[in-house]
Length: 124
Image 1 (cartoon, helix red, strand yellow):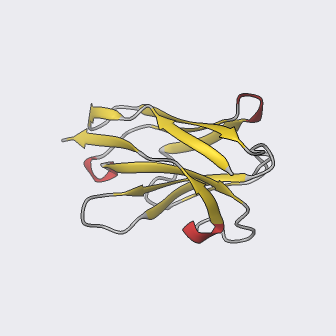
Image 2 (cartoon, rainbow, N blue to C red; image 1 turned 30 degrees about the vertical axis):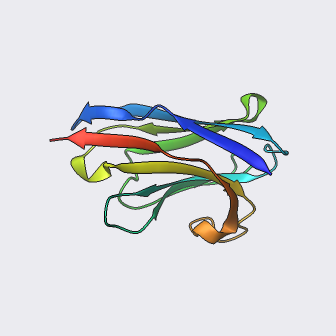
């Protein structure tokens, strides 16, 4: 199984940017799809962005499209989430995940490895 460690979260103001990183170790990572999910207090976990193992496809939630960019560097076993023009509603714990979700890149159960999460707080 792949072990994932997120980093890069923090407290920022609305309009600022952050870049999250997700470092993978353990089992083969480069041939697995990856995704970011987030969970705000009192809310269910929601899909944010996903990327195919070879970066051929990227998918985004409507709420972040045009502001967030997912990317990966398989040579470094790392997935990134560049977050621009942050809003207070982006406040959440952000989790990265890897797996083989097939057609269902937006669904959490399709991923079998998850990180512990990194807190992102956006003040107004």
